[in-house]
Image (cartoon, rainbow, N blue to C red; front, side):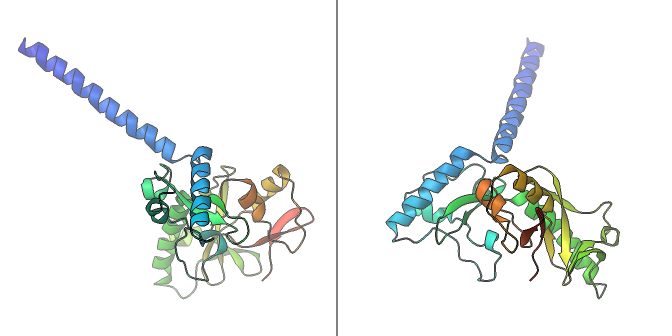
Length: 240
């Protein structure tokens, strides 16, 4: 009898552990996926908040020189306090997810979009190694020149086994991490932009910032990017 009880307890324990493992995994997958319903929910909440507050948007204060696609982050605490949002999306950073919710075109047509924080982590990892390298060397680890003041990274000097990249949330392609002359890190979006030019009709001409093809037509913002324009149907770096 004692042996039977021990055996039964062991089975229950295994089932409990399996159940505990399965639930977080399901939640993890959910929190790593862009969700149209969650985006729509936050969009509605932002619009309701704006209407309640004489056009003011629920955004976190950032420095004026913050790059445009990382500048207008949604402040979920303001949405909760104003009762325009009851639940923070499961895929939001503030709720353990991998996305930051941000606003595109806040002055004219506020649209809620996503920044994939897995890209942020990949860049931060390279940045840490870059700082270590620069503590010992005068110049950043420049690789081949791409054009102008834009360079590949000599990844071997950073102790990496391959050229660093991020995974695009739009195409799932590997996008290179590149560097300017001052050693600042960026994502090279030319692969994604080439695809977006094919996927979406657009009115852009040479001199226009074509990053908005991605920002306006997908759930994602092209964060950590140089400005790009179009020339002969191809994305090129915009000269400053």
